[in-house]
Image (cartoon, rainbow, N blue to C red; front, side, top):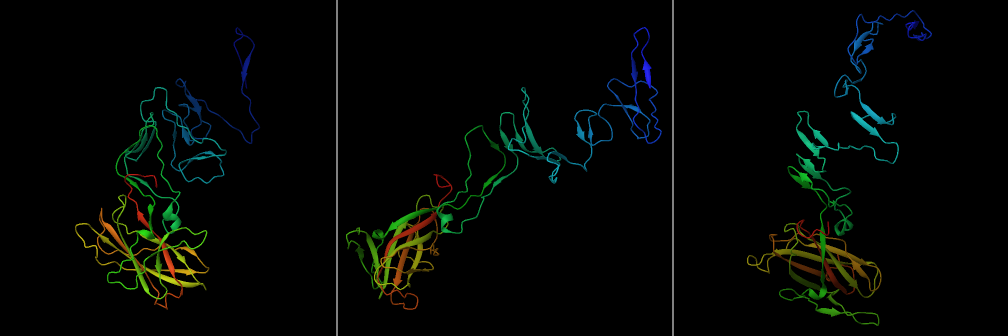
Length: 360
């Protein structure tokens, strides 16, 4: 169909061209003019055209006003790879190593730039245009990786919580931080241990090992292979101990004489002593047996970590009493026929989370 312009204006025309049709098609125009900015719409799909607001229609998005809306709850929006399964109302599927989302405030922005809120419009999380983060609920930060289950975990872990310097951060409500237990080692040399007699028998004094050219003088507690020998130690718990968790231990021992992969057994027990409240000869707790198998001459050994149950009451500023022994007369559990020596006792105590945090 061709429509000529008025002859006074010229000889140009406007035309409508029809594509190949499978059947007759009729379009019926509206009977009157539309309003400014409206568009022709076939609302019913029957060829009867009517005027409608720009952006309106039966599609998923509506631009009939402010804001533009996704006018169906059964559909989602995805930006990026269409092959990714949708599991959110709005999803960005990145296809390159680049920033996937930027929220940029206006040059005159004063309101919050980002808000997460509940369906009743209660704000849960906000970020202001100045970068201030506000949370109205609890913040829980949980340790990643595995928990403390071995010596490597006790000595140190790579799980960290890092807070960098920068803009102020406001957190509303309670904050719960779950971090790995931090155990700090405390090394007790054998020279500090007292092989006291008292009501004990078979006590051996401190011995120095400086026999050969390459030896160095080192105080050691010597345990006989034919008697029951004891040593004891009393010390205040460190100031940064958490005040409740029982310490763990390791012993460093040294063997002499012939070896045939035989085993020496040591018994360790502990107890808390509170100055002004308890006797320092108070009972000890449940003992733990620690075995070491020596396979070569002059073997230097570090035991696995063990945890005796202390007697007494754990409290801030209390002391701990430690006793170790080897019963060389116990041919059933101690089959090592030579002298052994205790070189170090290592105590691992759980560190309080307050104060110096360099170990966390």
